[in-house]
View 1 (cartoon, helix red, strand yellow):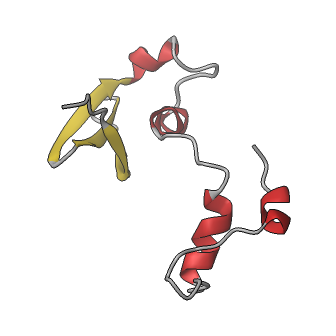
View 2: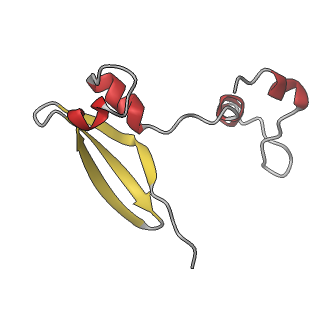
Length: 97
């Protein structure tokens, strides 16, 4: 069995003002959990002052450049006949990496 890595659940990232910590959900396969990390942990991890907003951004995974193409197509239900999203070269040229 291969190693599974935790996935951060973006909707579950929040700031706990009372504890001065970021709280976020993680999933490994079917298992779910909650992680709490104090603001001071991010003093060395972030290139900026660890404000609640900066700490939340530091936890969230960076967006995949193709998400900017796929998300609007899904919302508009622009799917191919086999229900898949197709990305043309023309659309991909506008993606910033």
